[in-house]
Image (cartoon, rainbow over all chains, first blue to last red; front, side):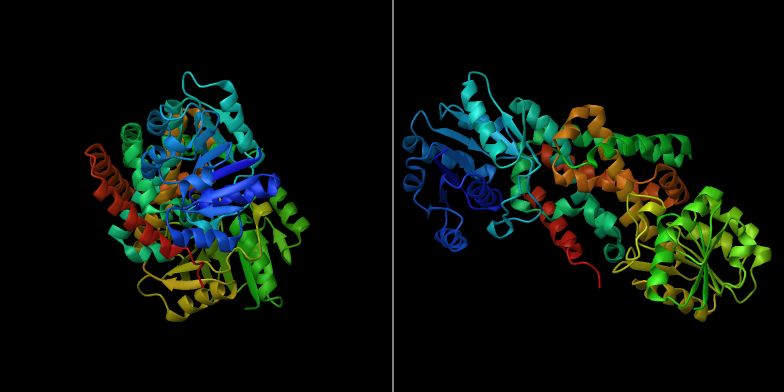
Length: 281
Length: 281
């Protein structure tokens, strides 16, 4: 790769620039930001070769363009990109929901490939960016029907370059699976905080590391997460109903004093959750 | 303090021994374990002056006895202790539920004080013990009516010695507050794992650090947590109903496409959860 254009200098865009610089120092990196102040911040951080609010200038000559903007900003930015991008340029994104993004962007670019690196944190913005953010994480690449296999491979190669373990699945499969392991947990963590504060706001000050970890993701940026949840609402509606039903069953078991069922539930959860103890790769 | 007896060599008992040794090297530490194999493990770790399965031998001459055994084992152990403990000896425990423990043990010892250090991890056993486990955590001390104030102060002094920020509240207040910030989150984390695995067991392999943190506590010891939940079942029943109701409201808001309500919910959760970002003390 000789030239990559990264659109959006947030946590993911900034980290991608740092990671590409570290892993492929010969690659030219251009960075687009919507606001001039953000461009100044990018320049001060020295993480790319060119930074600008001028989209045409940023993408000129790039072989690969990575949209690292919020999901809600993607369709508008994609429309601006269409006249600037030739048919050989690979376009990908890092959005947390894939089917609606792929449906909107695939018709616009012959080589659009959806992707989603499972990296990030509850912190946002360039200040939180790190060259090793992607190392040891899973990156999901979501090809749609009719896409050229070499475009998928080119996208996968980017994520492997920055340290990801790449998996391929369809956009709909992505949204169902990531609804379960990312979006639903976010809603549940936020609901936990909400219930605690509604019942006893002082209790939060008594907590241990358990609650600090359980609710960490609830400190993520609310605008971004509102867009993610709203975009994946059909999937999440069913998944919310599933966890509500599970909690209702649990509530009945506990009220009924059925300790063996409770123990079986907690034992199964531990066995499954222990699969996550070893870091990936 | 000249002599402390710690009953139970698990994560908390072992860490307490290490912490007292580090902070008050002149204090004699005796450790009781139910099984001879555990006594051998304690001796090999060299964390105390005397270790034995003989309760009378361990508590002889101790000014303070700390029960670090599972909640379910406390009443039986307390009965064995009664004939061995003089009226000036302070007896405390580290159980995660307080009202039932205090109700059972306070009548047995003139100087029994319930306490609960909010320290621990999903790991269990002596192998996970650390001298700094309690540093910067909150320890809750739960006096009951009629208890001598100096007994409360003596208990608080132990937890301050090992690095805790001590708070005092009644046993019932404890169980309501800690139900919210510890027991309920445990059940919710386990339910999340359960729902994910019921819908798509492979999805767990795609997760990022978010889910790893959200569900960490679900890797805790199932027997211990079954006892905790069963012991605090009346409180937890109401708290489970509260989070079920909150998730139902959220499900309706999402189905109705009300992004402003969703954003308000996520924003409030972030504001509240951000209170936990700075470590205590």
